[in-house]
Image 1 (cartoon, one colour):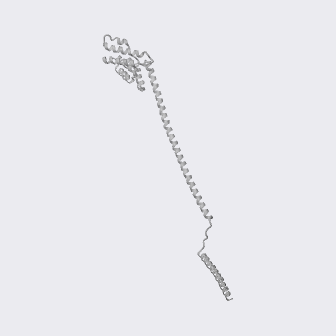
Image 2: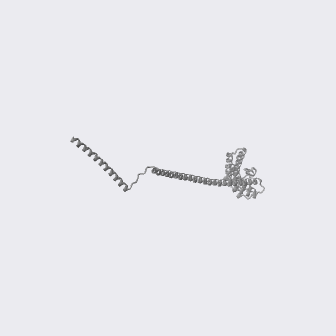
Image 3: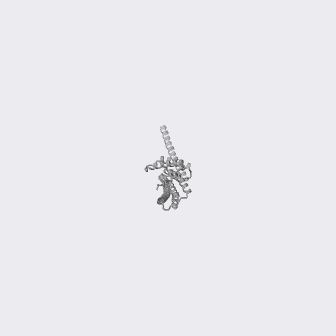
Amino acid sequence: MKRIYLLLTFLMVLAIAGQAQNERKFVRQGNKYFLEAMKDTAHLDTVQFNKAEIEYRKAIEKKPGESKWDFNLADALYKQKKFGESAEKFKEIADKTYDKGEKARALHNLGNSMLMTNKIDESIAAYKEALRNNPKDMETKYNLLYAMNMKKKQQQKKNQDKNKDKNKDQNKDKDKKDQNKKDQKDQNKDQNKDQEKKNQDQQNKNQNQNQNQQNQQNQPQQSKISKQNAEQMLQALENNEKKIQDKVKKVQAMKAQSKRVDKDW
C-alpha cells in the first residue's frame, strides 16, 4: 500500500538535449541520491533522500513549472516522511496537469500522503478521484479498499469507545446509587442506634423511678395524728406527771412524820 509511483524517467530527462544544462545537472544528481537511498529497502536513508530533495529544488528554481521535477521532489519529500509537504506538492501537480495518467498518479500519491497522516476521509476521496482518471489502476483500487477498511475499523473503535464510556457512566451512576443506599443504610443504622439508646435510657430511668417508689413504700411511714389526739396525749402525760408528783409528796410527808416521832422519843 505504501508504494508510490516514482517518475524518475531518465530517458525523458536526457531527451531534453541542448536545453538547460544546469537544470539537468541538478535533476541528474538528485536522481543519483534518490536511487542510492532506494538500494537498501530495509533501511530508510533519509540523508540521501534529503540530498535528492535539495537537488530537485535547485532544478525547479532554475526552471519552475516542470511537472516531472515537481513529481520527483514530492516523491523525495514522501520518502522522508514529510507527508504534509508531499501532499501539498502532489495536489499542486494534480490541479495543474491536464494529462489524465499523470493526474491519476499524483492523486494516488496524494491519497498515500493523506493516509499516512491518518486523514482517512481525504485519502479515500483522493483515491476515488484517481480512479475516475484511470479506472484500471489496480494498485489505487487496492489502496482505496485498504483505506475504507481502516475507516470501518476506526468507526468500530469509535463506537466501542462510545459504548465503553456509556457503560462507564452507567457504572458510575450505579456506584453512586449503591453508595447512596449504603449511606442511607448507615444513616438508618445510626438513627436506630440512637433510638435504641434513648429507649434504653428511658427504660433505665423508669426502672430507677420504680425502684425509688418501691423503696419509699417499704420504708416505715410516720404516723400522722390529728390535733385532738395530740391534745389527749399531752393531757395524759400531764395527768401522769401529776400522779407522780402526788406520790412524791406523799412519800416526803411520811418521811417528815417519821422524823418527828423519833424526836419525841
